[in-house]
Length: 291
Image (cartoon, rainbow, N blue to C red; front, side, top):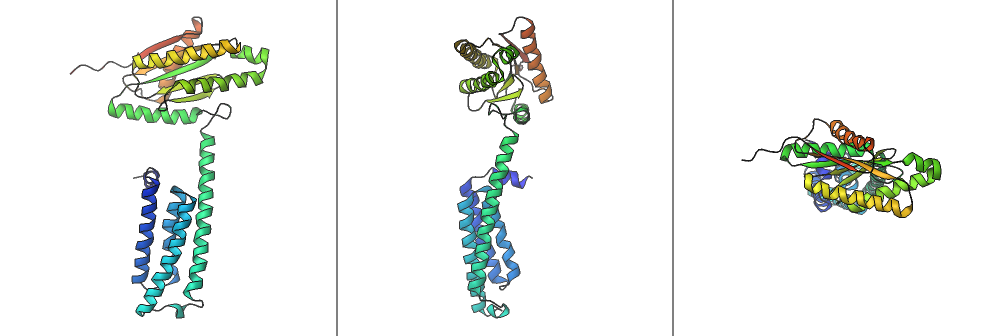
């Protein structure tokens, strides 16, 4: 079982409650096993948990609570008659203050590290020019959809888009205009699809749209709207481009994402060879047999 993946799917409220619970359990165990400095290391677990999965302020709060619980457990154990402050060169108040400062610093550092990690992860999955998903991120999303479609036997569709005559725009109007065209294409598509759908730039002037749980007729409607919007956008801006699209609707999941993309890419190139600027749509797999 992927523990980190499981924790990452939980709500922040649940994780915060878990962190507080771990602090309480650790304090009780510290009290029962007699106070000693080596036991303080166990308070690192709830602080690290909150810092990595919840956020800065909850983790700082849990760090402060951990220091307070540690101090109370130590003093209570001492009053019970267990070896206490006399075994240390400094009293519990100073130990607790130093420990609290250490935990708060740890919470802050881990939170900053998590923010940097998440930012790097987003950049690794985002196309630098258009801000949509890149090929790597799209492959991961498509693979997840393949697995989901196999499990629940739901259809899904994929649309492959190529910007016709894009090289002409770069040659005549400059690469700056070409880059702007790609950004507008991405924004236009994003406005026409659902939040559950995904758009990615696969490279150069080629884009793909993943349409989860979308059968043939529904995919026709969505892709038609996208094609119409892109064509109107190019016309209004005076860009001499059209858009060739290959669309596959899968009733049975292909063996791999690569096969899925190749199928849509093949249809797109069929459109380009036949005059460009149109849509070619096919179904992969057999329709389910009625019960």
